[in-house]
Length: 100
Length: 241
Image (cartoon, rainbow over all chains, first blue to last red; front, side, top):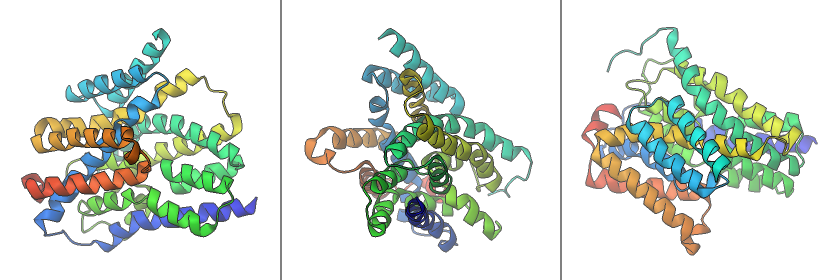
């Protein structure tokens, strides 16, 4: 149905503008200490908010999600790479859901 | 700050770090595809939507609206709300762009500022190297769109246990990004703990739970980051941001 493509293009246009406008319009270092500090904290807060409690809702068994969270924190604490931490979380869920 | 390193391996570093992202995307987009299937999208439409939008909550909302035959106006407004967090992420990234970077890069990698690609690119020291993003995009975009297409095509064929295990890959990556800086910087650690607690409160307190996940992310990000910036103007932010 061609109308679906129109829907998709509208969604794409909005998302693209949201993502690209700040990158093209903000051309110089921001001087304000407050804004700089704010932007420094943004990534950590955003990712933390999206991680919890979503991680315990993502699995079939909530306990497996909690275990994945603990294992993920531990693996990241001991300097696991992105792939290692992600794989550890998946493995814990897979094994626990076999048992539980 | 040093000049951005120009070695061919930067692209492959992006590919390497993009692999767990692609795996996680595959699982998430597979379930997104199942939602697209019930909204009446074809495999081609689902895959095109995924390549263009690269947004989980945003596309889920899009597919739901398509299924409900909503107006284009509604699609525009809902897309704005469900994806507004990318605006903050791009503002943060804008401070890490080498002033000498060619303009067209901003238009290419900027279009694919996803939660995860933002996470891994901000975690690297110094200026952004667009080739790192291109490496990550080279695996993440196919992972996301093929997953969506297969979800539409196959529905519920993939065993639930595998989908369940893969679905935590994204969160594992988020942890790998936020925990090491939290170990070094107590304020970041405090932000992470407060974010977990506040996000949990929004999830379980009935009145707050009606706020959508996208809006919750924006509200809490602005509130907690602003609080931290007021109380602890970051020394490191002055150097790195």
